[in-house]
Length: 292
Length: 270
Ligand SMILES: Nc1ncnc2c1ncn2[C@@H]1O[C@H](COP(=O)(O)OP(=O)(O)O)[C@@H](O)[C@H]1O
Ligand SMILES: [Mg+2]
Image 1 (spheres, rainbow over the protein chains, first blue to last red):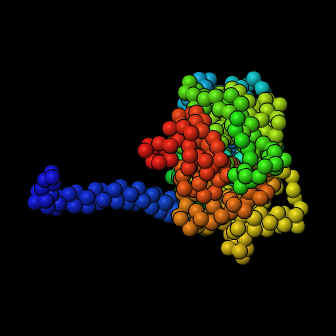
Image 2: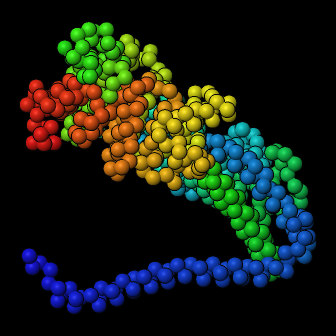
């Protein structure tokens, strides 16, 4: 045919392979950049905070003196907040995803809902804080309690969980669902025994990402009036509370530089907590994939 | 009228007594996907303990018809149906007829092997479990009988608790047949069950179909005419959503009445 001129092709070969290696190098550099920045960040935080990371740091409450300052109230506050936000947001988020993905008819109305949920996932967190302040703190008279904070956080993360769970549910092979229906299973049996087990790893990843976001979030809690100087552990869902990022923010905004090191210690604890959450996610995921 | 006698017994004079009852009778059955009509005015009787083959060019509505028989076609939201399909004398399209009940009587084997991502044992036990069987001993028996029934027991008996995805394509398909046998159906629908398999696995499945017809009524869609000729008692030829011709398999392949059937089986189009 003569469309391919092999001499010309050979002539261009060198520049083609060069471009190939250049692009590869570029992407490698992009990856390394992220890694290096992360490494520097972690190194700085740890060297700065290590001096304050001792047993006292975990058992002491907030204090005016840096050497006595501890993160106990904030750790417990964060745990309490998660204890409220996690069940509420998982039940609402996963339930909503299952309904939209597996039960709802695909029409204009569900598309509208769908679009709104995707948009909600992108709304700035402070807006959810204002909503929580109006609805939970004032209208429902929950006050500045763990309950109000947890519910506000749920508002913030439910859309994230819905979107992630929907994706996980949509990725479940239609073939095995048909196999289940073909054996006379009801919709719920199919969801419970085929769809959910296959989707759980994806759903859990989404849930943990959402909860990690909630653990690190400050703005909405400041809006609803979480405290920053707390010398007690919440006793029930009506107690006042603080959380780790607020405590850290409070320390970094103090004039004494010693408190900045305390803040670094707090950041280390926060990072460890996030790491723990992610490990739990990995564990659960492995457990579910082993069952097959 | 369509004769429902088995071809082997055709010569016998008193074949009226041997006439097998119908499991399915479709009368004036129509089906639309949205605005597109996929099946037009189908009248189709399917006899008990026969292998009934459905042939025709791709897109002619074979799978659609097969999936109408256990109402799997309703998983497509736009589907609309009219007419009647009777299963053992009851209209399965009536809202009174429960699909779950229908599908435990009318099992299905799909084109692509679709085992669950579970162990071999759990795949077969799935059906009995959803129908409420919990007892371990009973389940063990069902699993063994079904796997034997699908001629795969010897190959898997030492690895029942390994993932089904570790099996070859042909083994997976026979596992899917075993899974279907485990709910003890009356009819088995097979949608091109060998189209994704190699020739040896195909042969095994074909032999299996011959054995299964002792106890089950089988409706099999195939685009492979030799296969239809080899394994079926009756053959139906579909074209553009219509049932063109339906007769004993040897008649269809040796002496078709309709020109379009002849063109198709002689390979002039398709
Ligand atoms: N889910 C669907 N939605 C819309 N049209 C469909 C769907 N499935 C099949 N069809 C159409 O119905 C006709 C028959 O399809 P099918 O029964 O799959 O044919 P066959 O199995 O004979 O190849 C085809 O024209 C096909 O495009
Ligand atoms: Mg088909």
